[in-house]
Image (cartoon, rainbow, N blue to C red):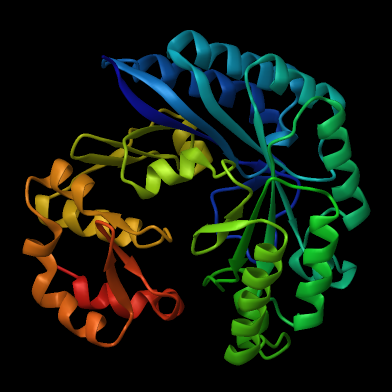
Length: 371
């Protein structure tokens, strides 16, 4: 029986760099799109070794929907020629409002993409401008309607919490507007201000002021409560889905299943090797090799816990033993005494999981478990 793994494809092109973005994305490089597709297909052919099938595929960026439809068509056909996809494979593509067209969606549909993720971020125009987004909320809503008209019904919306000048009422208004679009999935991410971004410079200089910790916590709780009232189940710290609409690709990553990464900056994980392709676009186009890291057994065990505790179900004792040939309790019994006593983690039905309170302070739990 073939091993089932994931596939990630990175599209590094964008119209304009957002204020918070530290991802490998490059504006004004449209002329490189065709040769980039060539390089990704070449890489796909190099990575076909192994008896595996693709169970999930995720196309991220950057802005994948900026790729011309004919280039996306060429890329998807090339990937399907290189790899064997399961008939029920979940295949996602990120799309940004302001760049999406019917022609692009038609290409996705014809090539097996069955899940879309829209980076809408916020309802308020002032916040979208602050973030450097190129779209309005009306454009976001129109993009979702266009996707539905093209036959897509598994749709995620990305929202951001803790933005400069954002209020609790802003978050509630954004949630109401997002729910009106009837998505199957919502990702509600807390802002992380990364060094080297415009956001970092503006916050450090005092021009932009972040919400205080209590307000940010209230924003997160509002997401939990409002989405629960609308039938969404929280299955990961930042992710909520209608029943059976969880993102299978991300769940597999959190369960530490193997995946191939294609494209500039893409990461892959196969066996005990983790690799990352060159994050600089020109280096990738020039054929610079990926950097590989051998994962030690100790680090592999910690990865299983670190990733698994992101999910509300937690880390499966059975899966942990199957993967590492040692029990979760044998490895972490001593380190878990303090967070267990503090009520931050609990054992339940064969899983180690964070409590509701523990989710708020996940990093302090992980510090206790560091090898």
